[in-house]
Image (cartoon, rainbow, N blue to C red):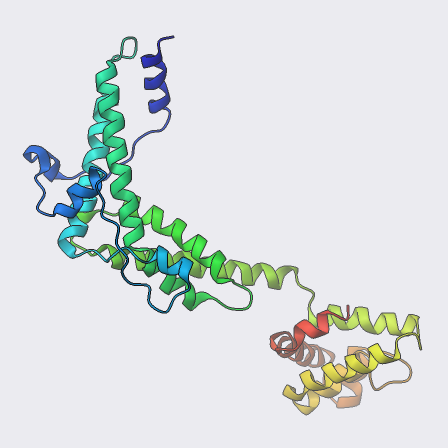
Length: 295
């Protein structure tokens, strides 16, 4: 197999996607912004602007100046125009005897499109940094969110249609926020699904203490302190149910819902409802992670 034929097959293995525009029919797609031409031809000027107040590595990532509306429009139009031409050349190439000159031309168009795409990504990185910082918390690190946000930005650049008249920043902000929100919510849901519930934690700790009495006095005292702090947010009935249900105030051990209902003059089902409500409050308490450490 000839090297030209191998090149053609290799290029065709990766379909070229682009956003079509009626303006592709304009002769040579004349550009008004010199920056677009400079970037496309690999003559990008090195700048150092923006990113004030950020760590050095983030400041470098955010150093590319923001684009004007006109620049943004031409960047996207020219990027897709280059991909459109590359795709057309590859589609029309003779599969058995492809022209090396045509393959060179297609690869050159793809390289130009890649330069324009990378500049668009760099010019909008600070937007992702800003959004990622707002979603950062103890369970979602900034670095993880930034990585996910940049992936969203790449997809947004590939899908943005500049002919619709919207600014890319508006489109990208919605896309990045949606993806980061989905990521954070999925992590929270998975954490709640697989983490031990307050009931399971209490059950395991109490069971261990009854099986091995006197072997962990200090541990039990610490547990009591944590529980006491957590139970401050419960009302009197909820406190009574939790203490009796898990045997904290009973010599004979745990008390059933039926027994508690008889003592309190309410139904077994009502006791269960109050217990579940109390467990939900304990799960949301900031000290719940300390409680999990005892299990």
